[in-house]
Image 1 (cartoon, rainbow, N blue to C red):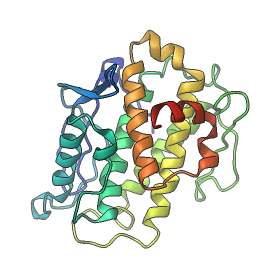
Image 2 (image 1 turned 180 degrees about the vertical axis):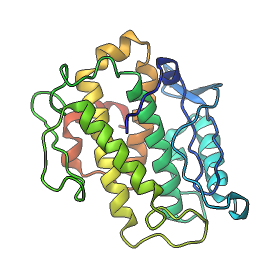
Image 3 (image 1 turned 120 degrees about the horizontal axis):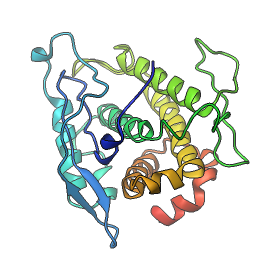
Image 4 (image 1 turned 90 degrees about the horizontal axis):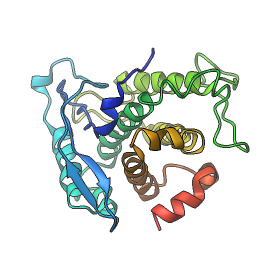
Length: 251
């Protein structure tokens, strides 16, 4: 599956399509201001990955409630507060809603770099000269394999969507229990999504700046890292390629 988005879409921070319903929503684009706070800008809705129940009308709007909580807290300008588990909410539900949201954000952002990130310009998936990532999903590709960056990332996006579409992993109706290994699945997703950010910062940041997208990239990554740290989703050794940036952003 090829993931293609227009450049105009990069200037949108797209909301999570709730796991309990087949609706598409748009959140707000959040830019880091000089003070480090977040300001919101209106966006228009676009269609991204949707995880739908077979009968949306029968599903309680729990995912929508959690999504509105994210929007409200992000709009307050306090990202650290926005990532915290709301009182009384289920941890797995919170992880699921945010995982879809973070996936949507990075897939839209990467889509704007399609003309810059090609098999010829990025023959390996890397984060600078010291770090190279090999692809394996344990099912279709069991042996770690060297791929170009766009091949790696498109395989990653397809793999994430397949996990989200699997009702055994991401239950499609509220109240159905998550699998015992759900946190491990989420951690694998976040580890691999981090690699996309690492590749973008090390290889395509100049292109990001030429497109005027650096503020959006920085805000998406800062939000991603606050959430990652709050729930210990990525091992510290995986963060090394961007550690200096992380220390500046999330200190």
